[in-house]
Image 1: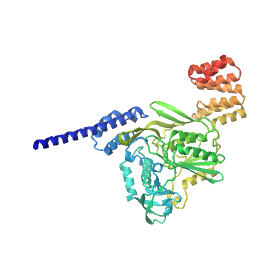
Image 2: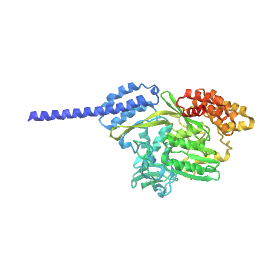
Image 3: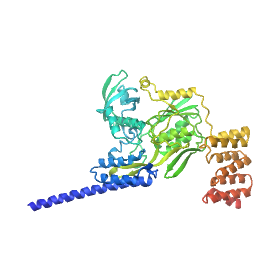
Image 4: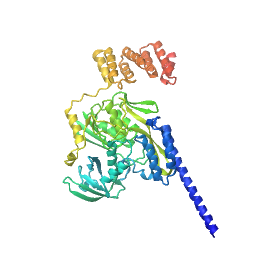
Length: 543
């Protein structure tokens, strides 16, 4: 009998040992996925001076010994957060719907928004006919407790578990986000609130979450489906207003139509407060509605290489005065968009400095429904400003004011309206428009001199497409000889550009100079053997 018991105990020990070994193996596999992804794909090959191999060696035994997924994810994040950048972290399957911004994911809502202002959780907006509105809650009221949790507990939780970038603006933004998350869930859920009204009287209510009444779309693989909507209105006879929740594909068409609807208004306000970001194609398409020429907008840096991103102007771009509102909850694509528009001097930025969460990311699936997000590129503006950890600094800094909210006034929006009404803002004029104006007023030499002045003072405006576009303007208006001069200048400015020589070849061809047309098309092909247009033109010229 004793022998049987000993055998059973031995088997239990063996099974327990096998289970522990299996757990350790799985942990190390996840560690290897995360570590190797950063090692090979992270945008900064120097890891900002961090010894990445040393971090692996340090965390390997700790992570291998983890007994639960919670501890596994905790230590993985502790390791990667040492890089001190945004768009980085391991997200558990339980947190998938709770990570990021709640207004994007959840089906039920109270219909109000909050900000952590001067150590208070202040309600800043309340939707009409929402549960919050029906309960008499108004902007400027101050929250004391949500679902039995005091506001102080939300603050302590975020201070104990900070996420990068480690600055005060991101801290306040994440405190607001964590409080805000409590306002969302499934339709029918009950949310308990304690709050102070405008007379500092405390109220205790229980409110039911209502359905969103809009479509939810799958946008990013491995991440939950998302909501987004567009709001717009006319403020006065000269000024229109647009707000959208995020830079997501399913709001792009309605946003572009709304911008076009206000095309003749002298002033336009785009409100990005609380907008957490979105996808590249959407932010680029919206930005293209506000330029009238090919425009250098961003540069993306990755492991020693920089890729320039140019905006292609829309057929009917908005040329009026543009103000963009931002705050500490405007992140990612919102920062790219507003920072980019500020850099090219296309918009006036009003509000609060953003947290600086400005990197582009990829998503890697992990076992059991978890996923790992990591940054692959660093965004740089046309002026060579890095926004990560710094954020967008407004041209006019305005903090949201609780006392103004209590009397129904959005003081940040009011400052934008005041700025637009009292300032004689110079009309937006593209570089090409300036060169064309100089040409007709004082001749081509004046245009060329202006180009070099712009290049010296605003180098981001004198990019590789400016002279090429100006040359084609002249060519399309039968100014062939002047176009040739500009295209010749362009080949000197960009001697390695196949496109520059191709354009010069086309100008000579239109000017009936077959010999020089062939010469320049051949040079274009020499620089880029795959340049199909030059190849086709040479076939025509040689026949």
